[in-house]
Length: 313
Ligand code: ASP
Image (cartoon, rainbow, N blue to C red; front, side):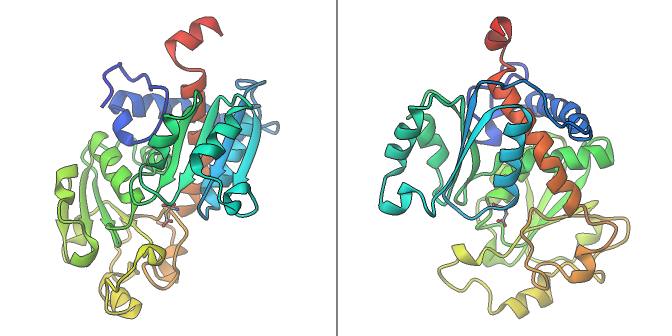
């Protein structure tokens, strides 16, 4: 954890890079950027003349589009590269790609990779600030920040909130980042799902675990995870039907006072029923909307907000 009174370091690789004050600082900054996003001209000049590179080596809709919009709304020059159609397809290594792009002197590189630890590696190869936009099963810190932002707006504070994270925790970088962020903000977190999809040592992150949904009614917030079939090399559940029968969140399992979240993309009818997705307690749209303001705040804090840079700005 950092100990610099809420100042963010040069990179954002893990929620562990932030203490509670650091998270709150980003959320407060995001509130002011949310106001900018409500204006007709949704732009501020904060990163004018600076370059942000988005490097996405894995499928993404929400994260890649919101990082791109965030950098553009801060007036940065933006280069977005996806593995399909780039030289990555021709066998160029991640290190060579990063070094090639460094020739443009980017202020920040945003990286999404199927490999845990990729963002940390990139940070060692470039002068730019690196933002982890999801690295394999490891972490997805900006997802956690936008989820905390969304919940803080709705609840006022996460202190004492009872949050259940349900589903495929084993393959989920969102689960890891969110357990860290929610607990740091004072929430009480329980993860639940089939024992084959709950890592054995998960309690070390500061949460409780449950193999059933019997106590789900205690939750104020039910945070549902996608079944990440692309990361499953063996069969972790007998069938998706069987999984849905025991763990799907639907109106029968969800009470009206509970809030419902999901990072997307949703497997409709598997981890969530159609009725639950479309219910008034679902906050999925608000989560997506928060993505732009929160990612603007992260880029701003990394590139402008540090005491040294602010002094010369
Ligand atoms: N979009 C999130 C991620 O990239 C969650 C998911 O894919 O299930 O990790």
